[in-house]
Length: 313
Image 1 (cartoon, one colour):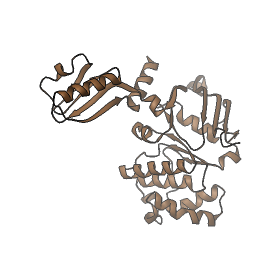
Image 2 (cartoon, one colour):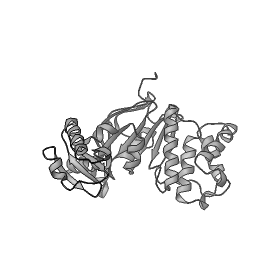
Image 3 (spheres, one colour):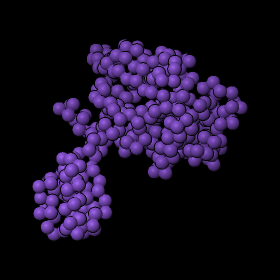
Image 4 (cartoon, helix red, strand yellow):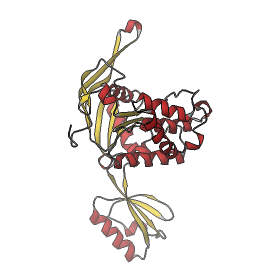
């Protein structure tokens, strides 16, 4: 495959499970999904519980079979031994062998990925240092906190230098400093040309690091786009000032709806940049010192909630 070809390509993907008495009830976990993910990008997969996100990842890894449609990784059938050698994976709620030390986990998983022991031992110290686990590498996993196990899990997913990494809730149980480290590592991977496929419920994290996002529900893709496309401007502008004038409503009369005020800021519903300019001119003419002007955007969280709730209604 060429450098411009998508790393992941999915066409008409479907997966049905059976449940209930004698497995008579059927439900579609994945329903006619089409998707492409480019090389060296950070791709976010969002959706409520039961949306089909983990099933989709497991199909791409070859852990769930018997699906309809096609799923390719590096132009190869998803789950093939050749494609899996080029993939790193941090599962949600993973279980590392608790009788091993952190160092032994790195060696074991590196060798399971097909790398020689010497190569694994050469790469392991830098990765463990990067996730803040080198000083605890000789302790057993059963002594680790949840956050420590999560950071070790990320290191093992990268030990064999994969070209794409699937991260399923990578910051679950990780403290703020650890989350910042993981965000920085994701950025480093992107700059190195590695594709990161991220599934997370922490939408603020997704908004900070992802290039493109897919929102799923009930096995279907509801929307796909860049963060900018999914978080449009709301039409509201926040003005922060040195002091709110007593006659603010008269100053901005006819420029938009005044939505919120406090001692040193207010929000104004405005339809265009010309009205922003007019508001600035009027405030300055009134002697008001403006300290900042911020166009308000729809957060990814609010966009997600509106989309999912609207679809279910």
